[in-house]
Image (tube, rainbow, N blue to C red; front, side, top):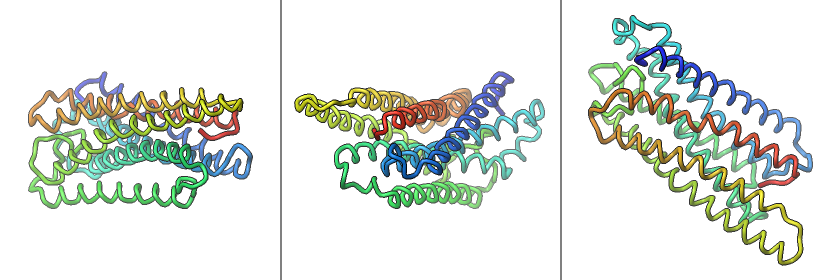
Length: 302
């Protein structure tokens, strides 16, 4: 399935890391939401920020779980995979992996864009924006989560019902492999391309305009002789935008290759699933929890 012991070990390490650290991120932010409501440092914007962080961590956690299932399945079959390939590729576990990958990819890209847009909106209109309304934030994130799972489930069901062979295209259980002409596979590839190429463009663009607002505010404060710590905010904006822009750019290239070539080296697909796609959940837990600590220590919201 994964091709070698090295890839199997790497998959288990990456999935274990993602599962552990995103679970920790979920726990820490949920704990802060529960115990810090009403404090000076936990404004409405700060509460909503943590809600978005929890949402992103949940998407990353789901993808790491899908990788963990792949790693454990490969460990289970090992040298007997070719004998059991037919049963694995049509199994409930394999279909579950595909559903988790599609849903988590959508949740991650939407969550990161929503976070960028919320920070921009709060900076531009600090007293008049829907992003300060907890009900709006929770409704939006809940709706996207339900739609993500609904879309991925519909794609899997339609693939199984419309295909004469219930096996998924590859042993990695992804409908991203462009080796069949099913509508479900084409739609999955389109969703992956739109979410990644769109995020590659939108996230840096939003943070660029946010940075302009922060620079203008900092210049005004300096002109009026008002103490300002916005210089650190500017650095955080850059730190937020560059890694995700690079990650989504890399993912976009990989998906373009997969969408364009009907035949390509299988290791490219493995590289995309095990190395490229997990980049977000490797970066996010440290980045967002670090920002939370900075905001709590400064008793302000970025």
